[in-house]
Image (cartoon, rainbow, N blue to C red; front, side, top):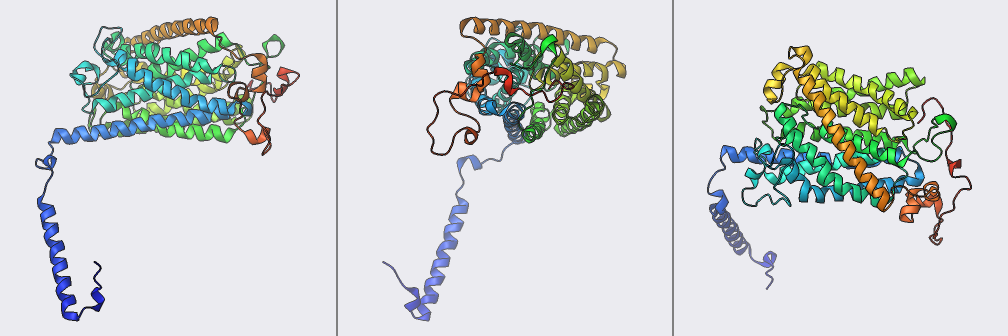
Length: 500
């Protein structure tokens, strides 16, 4: 029943209001006296730190996962428009593959107890299962919850798999992404992860790879190289006598946007590898973020000036590659070197990106996005750099390996880093070649010449990434593409100098 208080006399209105607010006050006092069971005891200091560490690791994992958007923009921009949709959606599929397979197999192989070469437990990870923490001793130094660690390490595996396909762009059959992704995420990547991060034999030797110049980036580049060699170059890439011709990407702003997203994501990649806000000492993740940023900045400038010198102009895609190569290189050493050395490491990596892309191109290896040079060559340099420049005070804080050659540590650390690079290269390249060989024999690796000429958007998905360019509004969807008479006719020689 509705009561209109405005029609009451003033005395009754005042009394009713007094009773109403008195009731609200009593209700508030009662509600304040009722406490949930979990509020009866204040959290301990260790519980607070566990919550903070978990929050940091989850935020870092989200940043690393967001790097997939960076790869999508970067690779799409460096590819031709007729392949844009294929390249972009491929990143969605491989992310799904890597997340599920690494959870089911890869995490256990990487981080569970086993032997020096492989983990033997922890498959289909249940972070609340019995003895979950004891099952992964290599991660026990962090108080973050096991679920956050699984999320973080899974994002790393997804990044490594994403690197593979940049070097093979514009000519791979869509099922290959899934088939190779399963093996890479379940068997190839995790084994190396166990060697270096999972108390494996390289970890016991003291190999320094803080966030994955070798574990993540070199692995991806080695698999990309293997796949590229099996595929061969794109149609029209090389003239007679092996002279490379440029096949320009269709969208440089996409390339720049992708690079900036990856740069941002790296602040989860490297600093997040502390796996805690106070590990190895309070706030050390901020120091790692600083060295990472310094290296990226010097890499951009170095690539700009080196490309200006060699190509007579500051090449736009080379600038992006310089930033990424520097980020790849500092990934191993970000926690071990001084700020000044991080600038040097980034600058050398930026130069490697330019020189490496040109050298690879002229060796007859068609790598559309520069994966082999940016992630492979720069990854090797970054891994070796700790053997040269690891500072004694930084090494003492992190607690891994010995100081570098130029800081009084002798040749030991450089030898360990070199051995790690050699062992990983032999294993990953051999395993990748075997998998690509089997896929080629069973189902095929490469699309047909007609499909490649038409573009992977239509030949693999029956749609274009930019449909308004191909289809009029209201027109029926075509069932087959119009193929050019000459498959190589779409490739225009813009410059014989860059070979891009």
